[in-house]
Length: 248
Image 1 (spheres, rainbow, N blue to C red):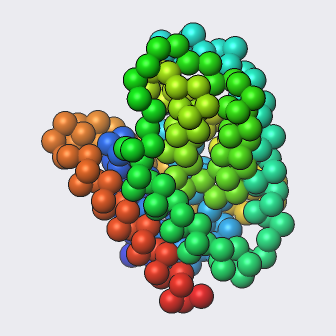
Image 2 (cartoon, one colour):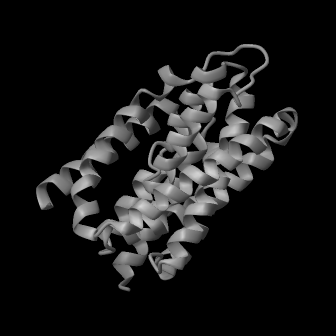
């Protein structure tokens, strides 16, 4: 791995941690950087799941007080999420790289649209939420399948689906979303690792960079408008989609 590639991966990992702390959307940057570094699309997607995993854990811990009252719903939704993520991850590794590459620009465009619309999709503040409803379980199954398969924009999709199914306080739903993201990512990582789809060398460079960026992002969150970071991520998503359309 060249020095230029190391710098690219570390910088993308750092920026991913920053934007995740402020606005979300770091997967666009890690996936894009690993693609530009020469990883095949499936390996880039699988490795990107690992780079984001520590952030899901720390975010859940930060929301532990809000999460405490949602444990019963969380366990039911976690089972649904695990099944959905397993299906999505197995579907990904069943594809060839050319087949997945042909899907990537469309997935990126869809995820970018969802991400750009994120503020409008967030649930409004309300009272108690009961997300383990039949509608909530069905929507979570679809979202977790997508998360196991690709993952970019999954957090916004999950907040929107949980809010649509049950309403409730935003921070409590966000706590639940972070916990379910751990479940989805863990299942996907197990499948990808078993299939030999992960590049651990690239992950070793990016994981500490994402962690450092996440720490720095907390401070930057007080100085940089979220809208600025959001549109940077949108531009990155559209740029990647164009790149895949042109080079595909």
